[in-house]
Image (cartoon, rainbow, N blue to C red; front, top):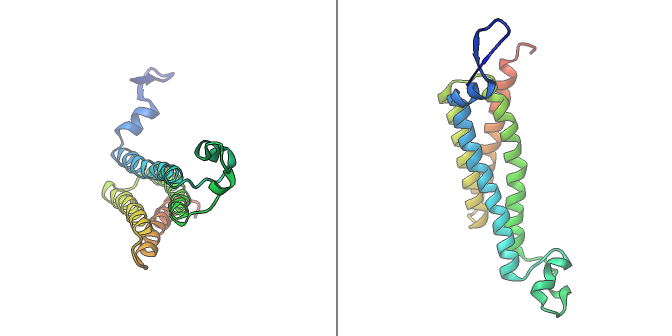
Length: 166
């Protein structure tokens, strides 16, 4: 679909320009991967809460208590907390990736460089989850976290370097 401006010339809509941009399509793919992984962590937390009978709120425990003592189901379990912490770490790292990545795409990077950023970030988040939930010995989790963080900083630096105000 093209849009005709006041002079009568055809222009691509902004959405079509994004859809035709290889860097944006790559970004959208890797954002989908890490967001789906992050959403899966939420489902894992819920699954283990139900499986282990460990709830944070009384209203959630009522069905599991079956008329019994609800308070005994309101407790903390280390395996549930580990999954929850992994999910929180995803939120703290994936949200900045989505924001920085979108601005990075708008800075018109080379496809190969952008793919490197996106693939390394997605891989680091998957490795972080595996090392957190297995749990693998340190520094595996710390390194996977740091790699993802460095990717975000690298995109931030590239964005600031491409702006003429600096």
